[in-house]
Length: 156
Image 1 (cartoon, rainbow, N blue to C red):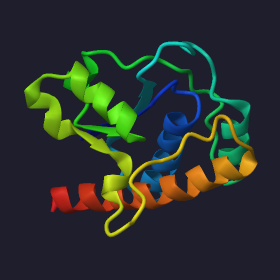
Image 2 (tube, one colour):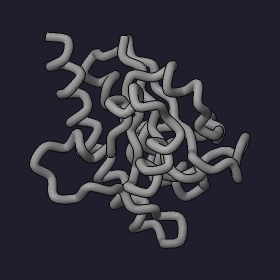
Image 3 (cartoon, rainbow, N blue to C red):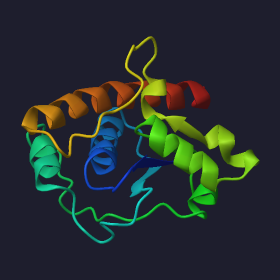
């Protein structure tokens, strides 16, 4: 079983969107034995649902994330997950500062799984309009397919 945690700043936009998009993509290709979660490096929104715009954007693609609740990434998550996928360089640096050297291989930018793709970071859509959430979804779909390919190769 692969255990994956998607991480952004507050766990109300990008990471719950990634959790929903990846879960949907994995289900469509029959990867059912995957544990998927999301968290934020900050604790401002603990217990809150995803941003209403994030919920609406993924719902437009047939995915429901309204049931998710924000939580903060904790040190034990390094032991609980095999892959910790950060949305941007700032959160990647924060995660690396929290972990021990032996955890370094678990922490990556989510878009690193999108091979030969020029964009490395998933931008934070929080302060923008609906088009920012749609752009984020496009990036999450690309990265999700790359992560599925990575897992499939690892299992071969």
